[in-house]
Image 1: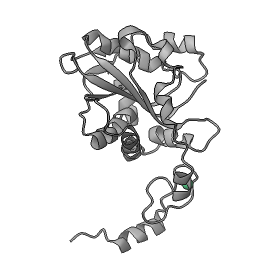
Image 2: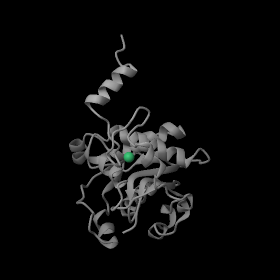
Image 3: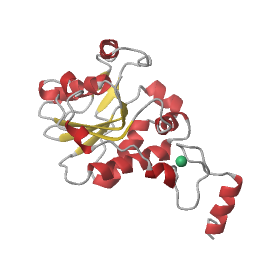
Image 4: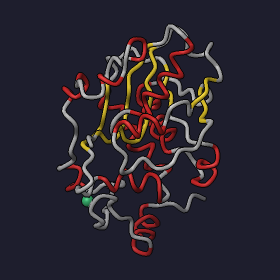
Length: 230
Ligand SMILES: [Zn+2]
């Protein structure tokens, strides 16, 4: 017999209250991760961000992305930053899928994206965290757009130190040659969406796209939850 009834989940909420990831208030029935009030004020990025030039300038030639999709403005003084924090440091596995689905809805099905590539973590870091948050986001997008996730095409061969506090030039240097292409046949001729949790300067994305471009005949778009500037 299935014990999970409405009464059962109400009882579970009583003993293990589910809290809004953004403001910390108790969630009521029907709310998932984010309360209605925080959803109403959600800082969605403007769709004109898709053609912004700030990140474009770091990408050249075959690496230039067609579009940059993002879900919300990431601001270190805003409570919404906690979404990204929770994704990495709490049990954020399912939250990643949930936010990925939101991003997938925002991208919409007017796109010709044929494959989604999550930015890989170094295996050591992935083992420590238990999962790759970018893969979780990719899975959410994949469920909405009905496009496959390719999570074995590229691997991370070098673990990097945290980029917090680095200027753009230092960030770019920090991530040179950290990825290796494992399977180019799977991606050749395709339009790929490269997914990360946050894009700051685009240095990690740039390094990943440069490695993927070695496959030849690949088009790129970028997707992230939080979009920020230094
Ligand atoms: Zn809230």
